Amino acid sequence: MRTIILFVLSLLPFVAMSQTTLDDCLRKAREHYPEVASYGLAERSGEYSMANAARGWQPRVVLSAQATWQTAVASFPEYLTQMLALQGIDMPGIAQDQYRLALDVSQMVWDGGVSRATQEVARRQTEVERGTTDVSLYAIEERVEELYFGLLMLDEQHEVLLSHHALVEEMLQRLRSRQQNGTVLQSDIDYMEVDRIAIEQQMEQNRALSVSYRSMLELFVGESLDGQTLTMPTAKLMLPGSERPEMRLFDMRLSAVDAQQMLIGRRTMPVVSAFAQGFYGNPGLDMFKSMTSRNWTWNAVVGIRMQWDISSLFNYRSDCRQLDLQRERIGLQRDVFLFNNSLLVQQRQGEVSRLQKTVAADERITVLRERIRRSAQSQHENGVIDTPTLMKSIADETDARRTYAMHAIELQKALFDLQRTIGVQKE
Image (cartoon, rainbow, N blue to C red; front, side, top):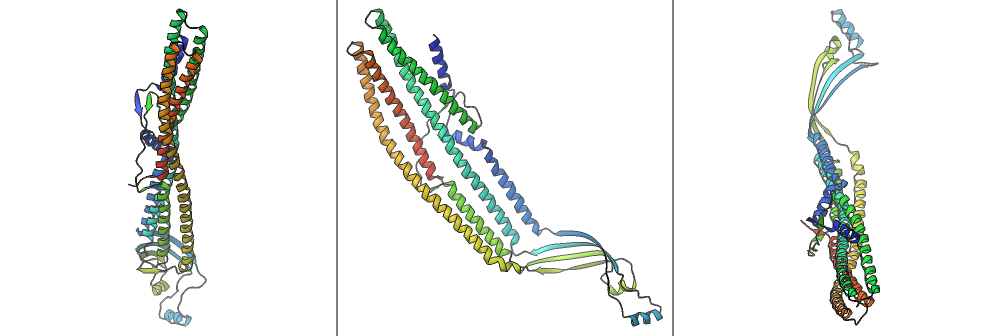
C-alpha cells in the first residue's frame, strides 16, 4: 500500500489541467524579463533628445543686469565744453559708472539643418538601443527553449517508465497467481520486484529533475506552471528572407553613423537669426543726450544676425574619417558574425539530418523490441525461458522506447535551433 501511495505521489507533477505552448512561454518570457523595460527607456530618452533638438527653434529670452565703472568714456573736447558753459549749457559728459537692465530676445531663422539632423541622430540612436534589447531577448528565448524541450524529454521519459511500471505490475500479479499454484518460485517474484523498485526510483529522480526544470522555466515566464502540461511544438518552415536580430542591429548602427555624418555637415553651415534688445539704463543709445543728462532711459535695438563657425570646417574631414572607421568596424563585426553563423547553420543542418535518420531507425527498433518482448512474455508463461531473460527483453524494449522518444524530441529541438540560427521571418 505504501508503494502505491508513493507511486501516485510521483505522478502528481505530471497531472495537467491545461496546456501551455512554447510560443506562450516565449511571449511571457519577453514580457517578464527585466531588460524589456529598456524599450520604454529608449523611447523616453529618444523623445527627450528630439524635444531638446526642437527647442533650438524656440525664441530665446535672456534677462540681464549689469553695473560697470570705466576708466575712460566718450566726451566733448575741453574747449567745446567751455564754450557751451559760457552759453549756460552744462555738458558733464557720460558718467564713468554705467548701469543697464536688459531683455534680449532672439529667434532662429535658419540653422543650416542642425536641429533636424540632431533629431534624426536621436531617432537612429533610439533604434540602436531597441535593436540591442532585441538581441538580448533573442538569447533569452533560446534559454527558454532549452528548458522547454528539457521538460518535454522528462515528460516523455516519465511516460515510458510509467508504461514499463504498469507492465511489470501486471506480470507481478500473474506470477503471484501462479505462485499459489506452485508453478513459480519466490526468486522469480523477487527478481521482478527489484525491477519494479528500480523503475520507481528512476521515476522519482525524473520527477525531481522535472520540478527543477519547471521552477527555472517559471522564473523566466514569471508565473506558476503547476497544473499545466507542455505541448509538443512543431518546427516552422525555413522561409526565405529570414534574418537574425543582430543583422538588423548592424544596419541600425550603420544608419546611426550616417545620421551623425549628416549632423557634422550641417554644423559647418552658417546660422541666421533675428534678434531684439531692449534695455533701461544709463548711458542710452543717444550718446549726446547721455552726455547732458544722467537720467536712465528706455532703448531698443532690432536686427538680423549671421554667425558662421568657420573652425568647424577645419575638423570636418577628420570627423568624417572617424565615422568611416566606425563603418569599417561595424562591417567587420557583421562579416565575423555571418561567418560564425554560417558555420553554426551547417553544423545544425548536419545535426537535423543525423537525427532524422536516427529517429527512423529508432522507430523500427522499437517495433522489433516490442515484438521480441511479446514473444518472450509468451515463452515465459509456457516455461520456455526464465524470469531474468524475460526482464531483459522488457528492459530492452523500455530503453528502445525511451531512446526513440528522446531522439524524436531532440529532432524537434534541432529543427527549432536551426530556425533560430537562421533567424526570424522579416515583417
